[in-house]
Amino acid sequence: MHFERSRENTLTINISGDWKLANTLPSSDDLMKEIDTVMPPQRIIFDARTLAGWDSGILTFLIRLKHHCSGKDTTIDFGGLPKGVQRLLDLSSVVPERKEARRESIRVSLLTHIAQVEGNIWHSILEMLSFLGEVSVAFFRFFTGRARFRRSDLMLTLEECGADALAIVSLISFLVGLILAFVGSIQLKMFGAQIFIADLVGIAMTRAMGAIMVGIIMAGRTGAAFAARIGTMQVNEEIDALRTAGISPVEFLVLPRVIAMTLMMPLLTLYADLMGMLGGLIVSVTGFNIGVNEYFQETKDAVAMANIWIGLFSSFVFGILVSFTGCLRGMQCGRSASAVGDATTSAVVTSIVSIVVATAIITILCDALGI
Image (cartoon, rainbow, N blue to C red; front, side, top):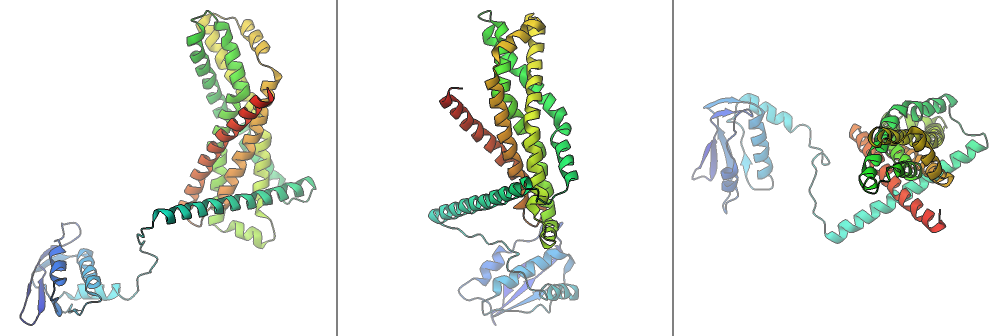
């Protein structure tokens, strides 16, 4: 491509060669600089007699040139272009460009950005409190026998949160018990106190690790599923259909999931505690010649009921947090496929953070109460 200006202040653009996206298109920077001179051309014409081939690449160039000359005292004559190019150019200008289709980059000040973040945080808190109120009302209606949901959905969710999760809970808890036993044995064998591996594994699993590992597993497995399913229903407008039919989505969708998760988490935690102790038992028996009866008796003497109750209470809290967060993110999901993925990711991240924070709070309270 080359161009020249005549005495009548007319700029002639000679388009030659192959103008296709598959090839390297000529740079138009020099042309734009020529148009932006102190004395811009009054008229732009084209000479495309030697144009060998073209596709939408030339259309992109012409649209950019047209936008660049808008607002200037420069007229563009497309008569020298091939008829096909002229038809495509006319077709592109028939439907106006949507203003919101092109994302504009707006730079804001630091204080404005902080204010926007703070506003989003307060908006999220208000949404969470509103959802918590709806769930509380749904539970009140449940205890008074007026909640509207299908009992079959509750049974299926109980199976999903309980029996279907046994395999992954068994594997992770068993490996955590193995790891705790190996890590503890490194120091304990220096003092000839390998028998206290049973104390370490038993107390750690029952008091904290069992509940934490089950909570994280259920957050990534079931909490994400809650968010994805409810979010998909939001995209397909099924939740709007429930509201139109006079059925509360919180009662119909959220209540069975919260009940099922809250009931199953303590049971899964007890199972995880046993699998973790089994992992510690295997390490002790195979690596340190500790008898099965010795390990069992040491675990029985070390693990008090207070440790078990703390773990069960923690798992009960984790079950509420995971189910509540998963359903909340699902209800907050947007109306697009990408919004479902965002809701699922947010549900998992928020659940895990909530579990860690709740564990810290419960640990501090237990220390303050001396248990």
